[in-house]
Image 1 (tube, rainbow, N blue to C red):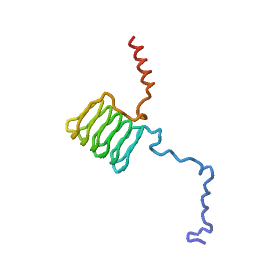
Image 2: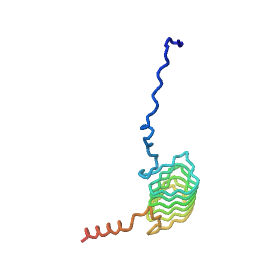
Image 3: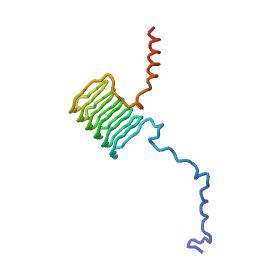
Image 4: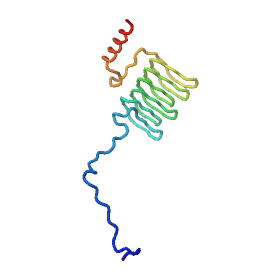
Length: 162
């Protein structure tokens, strides 16, 4: 007899069934269908990053970065070169920036050259480097839309103008 007066031990739970063991795990964040990736403020990445999606960085990157669009938080540090279709810089960058659309916020501190298609700089931003306007920024092929899509768009626009 046990201490609480019960003669029998409680029944143990049934073992997991085989079907439960075959259920696939949920996809991890950062899967291909995810529209953007986030690098948090407590994360340090050492090495180059290449992504076909948008990236929001609040942490530190020690390496080059290629992405579709970049949003950098005010406390973020990137030590490397940046290539993006669009970039919104609010933290510190030690390296060159190449972006079709470049926005430099007042909290930004950039130590490197900036090549851009369009540019906006807020009062208070600090840049130690040269600016150069470019009609076309060379971006990795996987970030650029296929050329035939542009041809179709132009042809459609020409029909509207007729």
